[in-house]
Length: 257
Ligand SMILES: [Fe+2]
Ligand SMILES: [Fe+2]
Image (cartoon, rainbow, N blue to C red):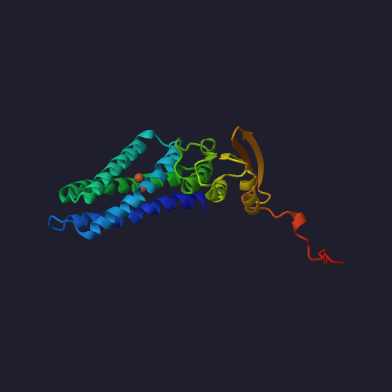
């Protein structure tokens, strides 16, 4: 996936929300006091997918774009997200308590907000991103999106790798740690260092990591009381097979003679 694809990918998510928003609008025009079952489903889909889309924009795209454009338009989009999140919570609560009037009122407000919001993003935000982001910005955007998908939204806004080059594995179940570590390492750029905090001897963590990322990292582990800090420096985007482990066919020979 290239960084240009990352902007396209965020933009195409918006395009997928468009029909859902319009469907919600047309469901609201149906008469009657009881809301149809499909309305519950549309609300459920928006509730499931919109917050992650907002996170990708707020934590990855907006901070990087803010280096190139003034803050005002981005502040308006952020405010729209906050209002949409609050309306979604109101709708979901009103669906649960079977309050059709409240569902209709809040859904109507959400539909008109999202229509304007998505139009602003397609008319201004995404064309500006395609025009203004440098190749370096785009690479960083790609890494930020991969990071959010791998470990979720960091507490601090993403505005450079040092803020998101840390991984705390202490709250993650031991059996999930190798997979999480590998996903995060993949999101790191070559030459960067990931600082990992973990419980217990990190050699158990290193063994599966070594298998997957052979030759692509340096590993420095330091004990700190009951915990460990491991600095993992990325040397390559792909594992490297050690030359000593691959015998050229011409020199390979039977090990028993
Ligand atoms: Fe969007
Ligand atoms: Fe947005």
